[in-house]
Amino acid sequence: MNLIFLGPPGAGKGTQASMLSVALKIPQISTGDILRSAVRAGTTMGVRAKSFMDSGSLVPDEVVVGIVAERLQDDDCTKGFILDGFPRTVAQADALSEVLAGLGKQIEHVISITVDDEELLSRISGRRMCAKCGKGYHLQFDPPKVPGVCDNCGSNLYQRDDDKVETMRKRLDEYYLKTAPLIDYYSAKNMLRTISGIGAIEEIQQNILKGIEGS
Ligand code: AMP
Image (cartoon, rainbow, N blue to C red; front, side, top):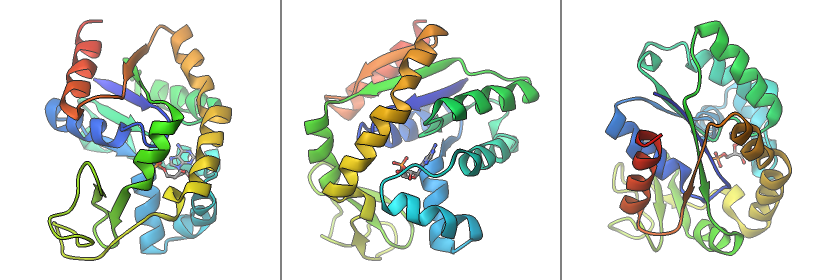
């Protein structure tokens, strides 16, 4: 099954996509994670992307389209994939259709996770990430066993620059301006499944499963 997860930053796309990836045994492709790895590794792409990411802006379309076009050709995508955080603009969505047509594939469902702004801002301010392995935590909902230390690798946790309140507001502005139009775009193609992102993580996952199975 080929899926897209759509939603504002902090809606829980990453958490839900990761759970669904395990349940359906298909890879989660997060452009945010791929870009952060490139920044950590100091690649040319990472250096180019960093200033956009730190300021809460979107990375240029051609950079992310190139990443996804390459990733979708990997062997683990043959049985399906979950795109998490891509597409984020109409131009990316058009480019994705072209790439998929070239591969003889198409998207089956677009899962749109909805959460109001006030809740998003409070969720994001509690997010922390491991500086070494990239594992994510939340001070309130998913805290590490030892405060400030990664359960996986023992490295220090930090707050992403783009999770700070001022940058978060910019990311939300970018979302409403450039990404939210994709809701109508996919709705017009009858591909949209809207799921509330408020509630217990497990319950939201069940609603997503029902949304893709029952349609
Ligand atoms: P995320 O972890 O998905 O919230 O992404 C973090 C940041 O990476 C975003 O604020 C953007 O700067 C960049 N990014 C991730 N995915 C995309 C995309 N599809 N298009 C443009 N920029 C992206």
